[in-house]
Image (cartoon, rainbow over all chains, first blue to last red; front, top):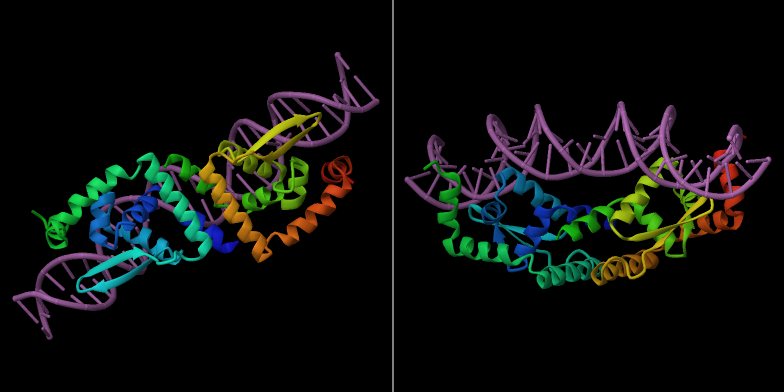
Length: 122
Length: 122
DNA sequence: CTTATATTTCGTCACATAACGAAATGGGAA
DNA sequence: TTCCCATTTCGTTATGTGACGAAATATAAG
């Protein structure tokens, strides 16, 4: 019960759903999610920490960058099934298309260039 | 997307999950849910209105009493699937057992007696 | 019609949450 | 070492949410 509440609370935010959907395409650096969601770095970090507490994502640090990915076999079989239904439906209705296009450009730019553009004053 | 957010927000509250689970056993009067959840009538009414806006429950008025039930084919096929997974898991883990026992007593008492006990000063 | 009563609506309060910027952290780079 | 910079943590603010009681609503009973 407590688990289900944590899951539903984690999923009850548009930006977190968008982040999860983006992570379906593979692991992403925080800065890439910042660019996608167009939010302050601290805000994105908080969202990711909520998703991690809910055990929906894992993270690993590589050099200066922190990468997040969907937790394999998300959390529990039940939660996995919920996410599968969710993503299938979002796919079907095309809600992810715009973000996917956006994310493609972001990934193509490369993390180094992206971070320079995001954080350096120029 | 908007729909999914509404669904997850509606499900992200323990009292609403308990109410939905109780309604799985058949339609219930508001006063029975008040007795189950042990909350103020206005609070329960608000929860039910949230569930109704989310199209998870339907209501009908009969005499003095308002009955709520699970919306058949809850909202959308996708939402139905989510609820099915949720309830199956809650069943499996026994989280509903206590409420079911409680609700049996409440139903057995009968609505008239229950309302007298709940609302009349004595 | 008038009263009683089950439910909803409204107003309010306390608390949770999402947003931001500033400051802290921690791992490369110089 | 010292500096740089991506990320996180912290503090604050604005908004959302759940709780209650009082008042409004609607229907049955008298």
